[in-house]
Image (cartoon, rainbow, N blue to C red; front, top):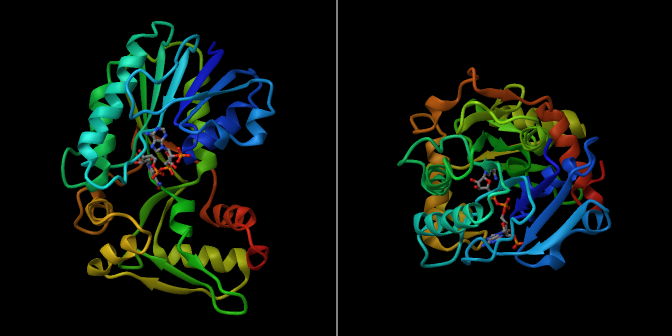
Length: 310
Ligand SMILES: NC(=O)c1ccc[n+]([C@@H]2O[C@H](COP(=O)([O-])OP(=O)(O)OC[C@H]3O[C@@H](n4cnc5c(N)ncnc54)[C@H](OP(=O)(O)O)[C@@H]3O)[C@@H](O)[C@H]2O)c1
């Protein structure tokens, strides 16, 4: 049975949710969270007797401590540094993780966080990060598992604007509004990740690769309907045209070259895009339980600000 799990980087969304899930598991594993800045470890973790905080940066060689751990959960973080191509960053960071794994023979299992579409070596924009990480790490330890989730509910809902007293507006890149894509809750992701980190026995197939989707595919119209059902308010839906997408990311302060990588990833999931052929519930798909409307309720509950406390 896995007794000690290391999560790197622990400040990622998938890392944070999985640590939360691991710390309530009946098997009581010890969890090490690796942060660039350990002060960012939340008190709910640092106050837990089974949690250890460590300092480390996947971009720096020799800075990852996997001593005494049985299983490592690696979530490749994207870089938005101007000048570093995503592919160069992906090779460098995965190489640092691989060297740390190979210097720690105690690590028997690696769970690699990837993304739907990471099987393609081109035409997927920023997901080259995940494709390259998969290739670099597929044989790094005896038991490698790769989770390829769909789009996070929280990410798609983050563009919901609701000024007090006005109609809520949802901006979305999903166009046409009827186009359905695989979405999933972080709760379901954390459940699947915890299971794959803690389950007994090595998987006979390594690397073992699986998709992780919510209970069904959803469209922009489904997002609108779910928000309306959860809040009782009519929502205005604004779908971005393809040529408006670069501006969408520039507005978030992301450098132009990385904004283009993000745009290319989004286009890959729209009709005619590279990833659409992968939108299938197949034999290697884990199906989550959390419906979109419940994901919306959870999102609104966690979002700060009085106007969100519906
Ligand atoms: N978002 C989605 O919908 C989605 C869906 C499927 C798959 N994914 C995959 O999930 C992964 C994470 O993507 P994300 O955009 O959602 O990011 P994220 O989880 O928000 O993680 C980004 C965080 O990683 C940490 N980090 C960055 N560089 C680091 C470094 N060199 N060393 C250690 N920590 C570092 C930073 O935290 P600090 O600043 O606190 O250090 C940063 O805030 C990607 O591989 C992506 O393809 C995402």
